[in-house]
Image 1 (cartoon, rainbow, N blue to C red):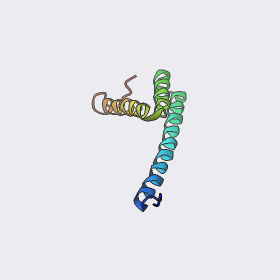
Image 2 (cartoon, helix red, strand yellow):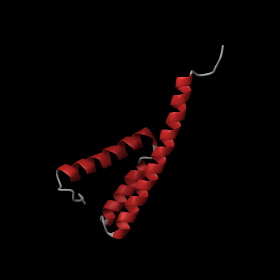
Image 3 (cartoon, helix red, strand yellow):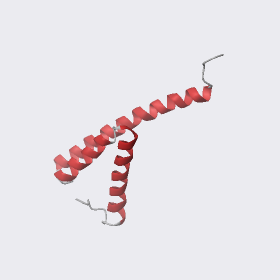
Image 4 (cartoon, rainbow, N blue to C red):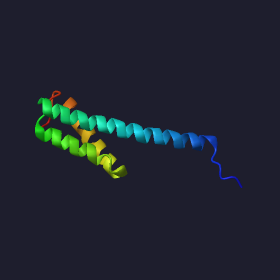
Length: 89
């Protein structure tokens, strides 16, 4: 018996690795952006710290990613729909 995976499974494996690294890169850019915005005074230092912490949490497996996604998604929805585009804190 052959242990070789079908071509579709091999492609999916490569694609999942690309998504994993892409997520890490985007997450790192997001954390750097939160720190930069806090240093420039565009957001409060509290907001910068919480955003950075939630960005880091996103790297801790599926539960961390889910928590980070809920936080940032919730903030985006709140600021867009209920706070006239202004930061919540």
